[in-house]
Amino acid sequence: MTRKTIGIVGARGHTGAELIRLVAAHEFLELAFVSSRELAGQRVADHVEGYVGELRYESLDAEAVADKAVDAVVLALPNGAAAPFVEALGKSAKESVVIDLSADYRFDTQWYYGLPELTRKQYRGQHKISNPGCYATAMQLAIAPLADVLAGPPQCFGVSGFSGAGTTPSDKNDPDKLRDNLMPYALVGHVHEREVSKQLGIPVEFMPHVAPHFRGITMTVNLWLQQPMKREEIIARYRGFYADETLIHIVDDAPWVSRVAGQHHVEIGGFAVAPGGKRVVIVATLDNLLKGAATQAMQNLNLALGFDELCGISNAKAPAEVSA
Image (cartoon, rainbow, N blue to C red; front, side, top):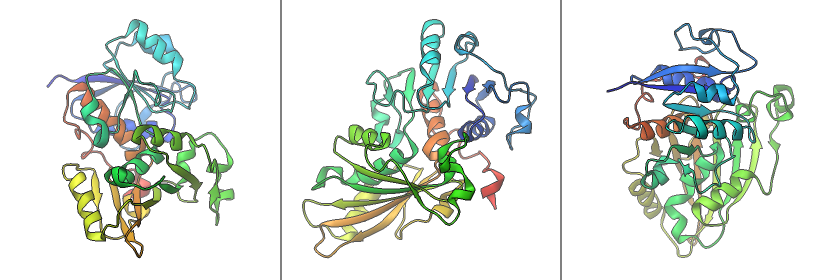
């Protein structure tokens, strides 16, 4: 199979490092460039465990990225920063696949929204792919199997490790401020609340929090049903819905985030049913840097470039801080 070339813009961040590891483990992908202003000139291998090679970070503007003419570009940039790169690639590198990890194009109907387990059938060869948010991935996967039988908006209580706040210093990634703490923020109107409401076609209520652990999301979802259901029926519905999905694991008990950190899959479990059978609480966990970002980007890259969707994912080595 023909090898494809890929470049990463915004490679200094946590997700950029995870993507580099995934590309290194991929039999048919070659990392052509990684762009980072802060790390320009430094060896990638000195910053990313698992990458072996002499490639160095470059500081590339939008036109320079487009001039590279690679098969795919992943934009791992903060919200609001992708547009110049998208414009430049659209002018002079129209055949390049563009994966945007920010929220900039998740509401743009001209872009394919790439949550493979739910939107794979909607892919029609689009070259512009918007990667879902980490919280939004957990919420959608937890809600989707029951979306057609709900009696009201799901209430979602999310807790993320502080890696989700990125590398730019803030209260939400300050270990001292987070120690012995749970930090609520953006309790109404969060972009992921709007994202999930749009994608599922139902209103969703979301309350995010940051915790002292580094990586991983716990999403506890409260659902009201139109008609009573037994726990066994609900579990059977989830198992059937995700029967062919390698990266979705349905478990009996409420999953722990510590067991999914560093892993590529999602765990969905708990399935606590209140007396009367019309209220169920479901818990989903995933690694926000992997299935919530880099792993999902790799699924989308594989789909767009014609590889098996899981190519490179099962071979990727977990980072040292969670591999023990």
